[in-house]
Length: 325
Image (cartoon, rainbow, N blue to C red; front, side, top):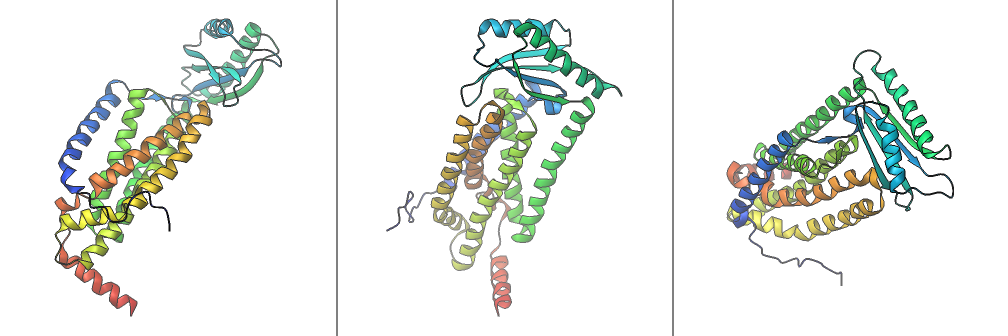
């Protein structure tokens, strides 16, 4: 006998909480937009342009607080503008120091100047901490490239949501597409909001995470929408509210098991992936939780407002029957 985390005969009235969910989501959306415009995102080197240099101690040596102070003084002494120097610890317990310089280098020679700054920072760190230090990573992103990345990142998100709208429209009907797109937009805005509040670094990896969240949430929504359409044809006299509740309950076990297994993977990535993957994995964790919530409490109940018609379900059933023959 197969183990079932969620009983197959649950009868939870999800639809009755739609107004509570609407109020909660509205407050979170307002808070996310306010945080974005007041606090702003902590853009990483991908979007701001600049130089990141990560160093480690020499063989048999270790960094301490005085090492961080010396590194900060050395980089500050170059008078390069906005500079951040901080300690890091890699997943294996290795110590390191990261220096990020947001160099203002506009103009045609901006990209060349960034490479010069990278060399200056490395020389300064070696002078302060010794020639034995190891240079683990040097990232250089010029102002021209960073501007293009912002534009392409935003374009990727807009195109992804627009294509999902078209897909749902053709896959189901326009009433379904409205709920699905509003749920996706809800997930993206809340994710951006939480990054504004937490001030986690927002990089290209987070754009990739947002696109992953869109795909994950849409997959979950399509599964429930498929069951709703099936039940509309099967239970012709059942009210739309009851059909939605029945469909969500029937897919609840699948939804929770999928979310839990996904969370196991991304939580492990968050814990053991190190600082480079921390923002990406955090975005995925948040996205799985918010995506599951929006599918159940936003995408599905919105069908009550858009008004899925019975004649559509009947004509769809006839079309499917004709296609089968």
